[in-house]
Amino acid sequence: MKTDRHTRSALQLLRQAIGDRRAVSLKITRSCRTLRHMLVGDEALRRLRSLRDHGLIDRIPTRRQLLFGAWDMLRFVIVPAARDYYLHKEINFTFHQVLRFLDDPLSIADPTGLYADFETITGHVMQVVHLNPVYDMQLLSMWPDGLQRFEAEVAAMVDGSHPRAATIGAIIEDPSYHGKLLDYIRQYRRDADGTEPIVRQEQSLRSDPHFANAERTFASLPGYIGWCNALPTRWSRLVAHRATLKRFPLDVGLPFAAGQP
Image 1 (cartoon, rainbow, N blue to C red):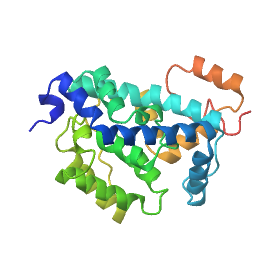
Image 2 (tube, one colour):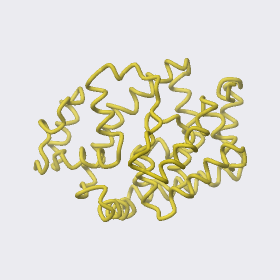
Image 3 (tube, rainbow, N blue to C red):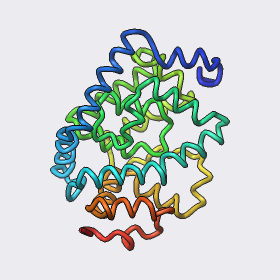
C-alpha cells in the first residue's frame, strides 16, 4: 500500500499540502500565535515552569541557551537523520520540507515545540514519521488533557475524519505510521515509563557513535533541556561553541560543565 506522497504528482502534492481557504486561514492564525510566543517568550517560560513543577527538568535554561541547544538538535540529529531516512525511502528531502512548510509553516521554524500551538505540535508528529516520539509525548503532557486530545486526533487520522487528513496525507510516506502511533499513544498513556517507543528503523547513521549519542541526548525533553543547561550563558561563548563544535561529543559532560559562565 502506498500513500499520496508516492502516487501523486509534485503539483498535486503542493496543492494538497496547501489545502482550502479554511486550512490556510487556520495556518496563518497558528503561525501568528507561534511567532508572538517566540518574540515574547512568556509561553515558553510558562511551559518550562510546568515541566520543572512536574519534575521533568531541574532548572530552566536561558532563552539563548534554548536557541543554541535547538541549533545543536537540528544539526546533530534532526537534519542528518531526516536526510538519511528519506534517502533510504528514495524521497527528495528538499521537496519533502517544502510540503511540510506548506502544511504548517511554523512546524519547521520551532523544532523544540516550546513556542508552538498544541495543534502545531500534534500536526508535526502526525506529518513526520518520527525518529522517536518520546520527546513529543513529554511536550504534550504539559497540557492537562494533552495526551488524551492527541490520541483522539491520531484516531481521527486513522479513520480519515481529521480536518487535516488531506494536507498531512500529502506528506506522510508510511501508510502504517498513524496506526502504529495510535497504538503507542494508548500504551504510553497507560504506562509512560514501561512503554517502548516506536523508533524509526531505517537509520544507517546509528553506526556512528557521535550520532548515536546525540540521538540519545535529544530523544527526550529532559535530555534536550539538560544539554541546554550545560551550554555557556554568554553570547561570545555560545557563538564560539557553535563555530568550534563540529561533531557531537561522546561524553556530553566533559566539554560543557553545568553552570559554565
